[in-house]
Length: 187
Image (tube, rainbow, N blue to C red; front, side, top):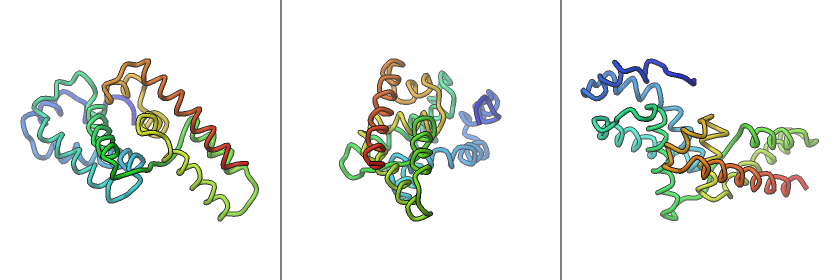
């Protein structure tokens, strides 16, 4: 779901800023699954992901008047969710994450190409999830936002408040580290 949709249009944003409850409900319906998905991959727990998603929308609701529209609305929501996840992870209360695409998808394919039945395939999938969970928070968040959520580099930079080069560097290092970890599980 890339590109500008009704939730990114100026009339919709004006309704949101004016406090239109139906517009906010539409915002939640449009983005709740994606925000929850990011939180789940970052936090590794459904309960924690639900809390982060709820907190994301509560914070967004309280700050809609300040939303200038410099970034896309979706990027702004990802930024809120990512910061909440990173803050929780940094507090030492949590550790984990999950999942796929680009490098992650390639690694998953290599895991699936290994001989064995469904149980062994599930174990290999779990190994991929463990490898992602072992990444540092700063590397995990860029893997999740780029390879799982499909955000562009500039969107990730805006969401995390980083320079574009920093995003590229972290993503490159994260992919190399993830590849090494998965290869350990394969041998």
